Length: 318
Ligand SMILES: Cc1cc2nc3c(=O)[nH]c(=O)nc-3n(C[C@H](O)[C@H](O)[C@H](O)COP(=O)(O)OP(=O)(O)OC[C@H]3O[C@@H](n4cnc5c(N)ncnc54)[C@H](O)[C@@H]3O)c2cc1C
Image (cartoon, rainbow, N blue to C red):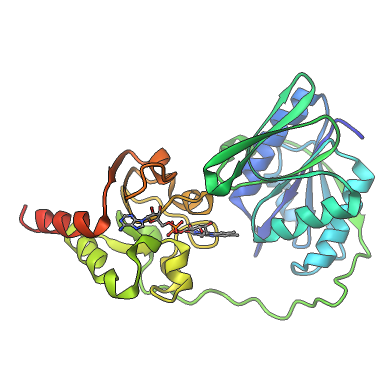
């Protein structure tokens, strides 16, 4: 095992995902603390065009021979890179893509995996990672004195720390890893949105606490009174109550309105990831211990069916 840190660089359509820069910034800090090198590994795509953006790394491993994302092929190729480099820590974003890879590489190389990681530090030569468990209600500290794979939640670290000039050494690696029975057929782009919630200054966001589609009218009225738009957590979309384009969070979109009013939303890490950068966050929830209150600037522990109509009335009459 080396003292190096390896970061998997996620990209789509030639664009490096923001979370990759977050991991590079943290990876740089960890590699320096451990006295090792920072490796960035790029699979598929035009690696040569991405290298210029990966200046924080000491080395960029460009893995060629891979097409569009294929979980089996990418996992096998990444397992090969890990076997060759023997990094002390492998940082993979906990995204839809990263989830497939982290567990697979962990099993293939018999290296422990810590998921839902939102902090990593080096303490007395040990890697100490913090994992957010039970939907963010508890945190587990995991000490690793050997190699470890860390699946890191997006939004945990500063992305700017991972961007910068540099001249990493580029290493080409050809892989023969194939996708077994899985073949890429086509990229399906999400449907055009009825409202672009990423451009709204005011969002009233509704969660499972609304109970049924029939009650949406209540929050829509509040959004209209405020001159904003309606967004939601994932269960509201999964239930078919609002279109996918209205979903905020990890598998939806990230929003940054001036005002984000979270109504009946618990504040799971996957939701917080998409709205934590809003200017002012207000939460309405019956559960005083709901994690949404940890990120809210203002909160009301109350029934939304009491507060929302009263608030709408107040705004309309102001
Ligand atoms: C890979 C992955 C990706 C995901 N992506 C996303 C994503 O993009 N976006 C997302 O939101 N989630 C996402 N999730 C799901 C996420 O983990 C949570 O399950 C989800 O955010 C919970 O939604 P919620 O807060 O609306 O529902 P719940 O967690 O069920 O919370 C409902 C809240 O409403 C409150 N409540 C109930 N009744 C009332 C009332 N009358 N008045 C006031 N408050 C009330 C409750 O106290 C509770 O806090 C993802 C999960 C995974 C595993």
